Length: 474
Image 1: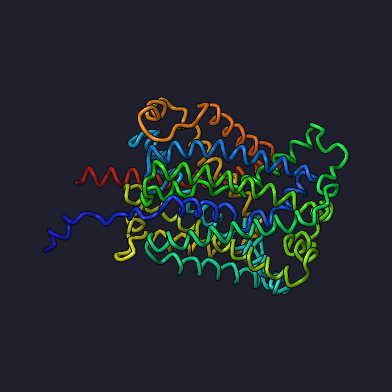
Image 2 (image 1 turned 90 degrees about the vertical axis):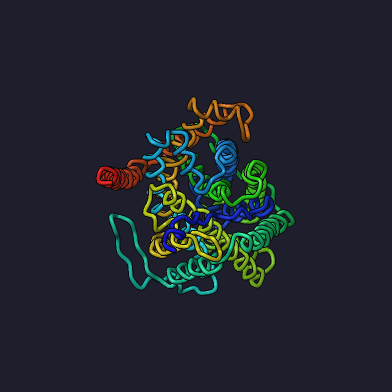
């Protein structure tokens, strides 16, 4: 009997995600609460309606990087996305094993930050109905990072718990849920756009300050800060790649979901921001104080157009979009520690599938638990740390891998092939490097990334020698 159990094959993930659902999953991951709460940040960083340039360049960067994800996603349609790509392209028994481990390691930090940003955004917007929720009942600093405990913190944690409960089902059930979530999130953006353009003031929307496009140091610093924010708002177009082993017909589905989501969301983002600036003066949004227009931009926008009740409706819709993004992020990221565990590069505990639903239950619960802890941070610190860490550990390594001889040979044999290769790759790498080096706090954020890298390297080396000792003893 024991021998029979040992010979049984491992349970595998189920291919149940359709093209429509994959597209919807990417859209709700991209939208979330980001564009609704970061509009004042990008306007303030760039000093006027020229912030639209940040959205345009962010869309171009996302499209170039989306071409990279489309190539790799169809070449290696496996669970874990970037984990699998780095492993295959840098050598499964060489650097690839170390790079893929470090990627999965940093994900234990960056993924909860990313998911927590959606939870925090959800709580901030929902506090429109609870004005005292943001009042801290405890606050401190940890390694220079502000930590706040308040009613908003508890609301953010509640959002994470709700997402975990909804995700405790099969990919076939999730496929149906994602279709409706994608539709409702898209309609929310369309609703804001229509409202803005039916009350549009063109002179206000394009009221550029003097010297707005003067190409000096301040312009490029502002552009770098603006692109960092827009990059955060666009990210999520690759979520389907993490679910490569659960996608039906990945050769067709992955490129359509990745590139289609970027095109749809970029168009909606640009139209939404123009429509809002045509109603709310950019000077009001760019204030450094925590004004009502800065904290609840879309609520103030709707209130001025249709009254307080309309503001309440848009707050509920945006809160729903934020909760949907938490759902999508947990779904995608939970597959990466699972893939590393199935590969022997992470503790086997992460590789356990639920016996009925065939979902990576331990990986999902671990990321959910760490997200609960990350909800104590402030949104701005979460966004900047997240973007820098992710660029260093994922986008730059992955983009460079696409230029290696191994992939140049592989892309001729199978999968999606980007047009104008390798130009989009160089544009993507250049854009990410510009975001990194144009920031005034670059060195501070690099120290955080360096700490994660050093800790991960130590863990990898210890595991490597421990595995060697076991092989010798065996």
